[in-house]
Length: 142
Image 1: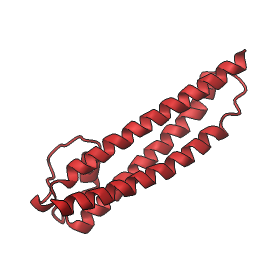
Image 2: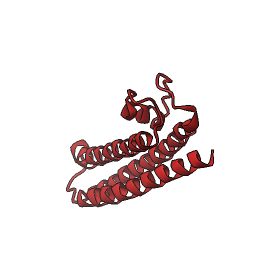
Image 3: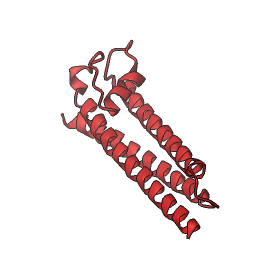
């Protein structure tokens, strides 16, 4: 159990670092789009769409990290689609069509916990970018 939790902690830390880097890039991207000149849905979309795309890319990269960990430690049988398995765990879908070998069965819940936390972080960032953009747009109209 300790080995599983250690590997899970390493995977989580790698993802937290990756997410931090992507959040930094996202904040820079959002700030670069603060040169809005009018209040409009199109202007808001110019900020929000790239932000969500960056977050989607971040989460896909984080799933890849989990898939690589699964491959290295041999979480599932060789013919298993580990990228799919990582997505199912990370997003907490839990289909159950691929199951880990018993020795590594705690990695799925650790990956799910990691995914939930990082999705929450992403949601908070999206909301903050939206809030700040709307504040900036309101200032333009006054």
